[in-house]
Length: 69
Ligand SMILES: [Zn+2]
Ligand SMILES: [Zn+2]
Image (cartoon, rainbow, N blue to C red; front, side, top):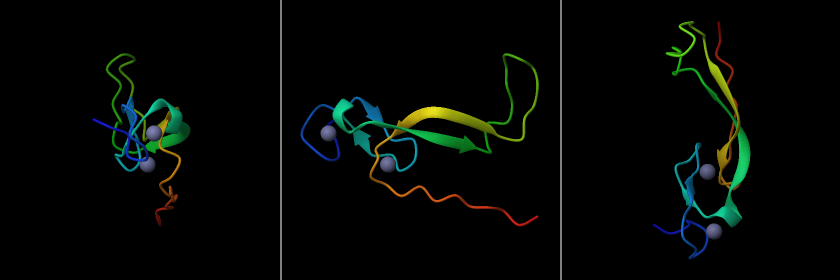
């Protein structure tokens, strides 16, 4: 698999848009997931998880959405 933006070998997949990116095009983003709500290790439940330094291609647009409550 090759990088989406150049012909280098892809090292990671963007957490946000799914594009394969090489090490040169990998950036770190902040990923918040509302789905992975159960932790097997701690046995506790959380409403959402925040992943700092998640793999981000740096090109796709990450738009926060605030749910109406
Ligand atoms: Zn690349
Ligand atoms: Zn991306």
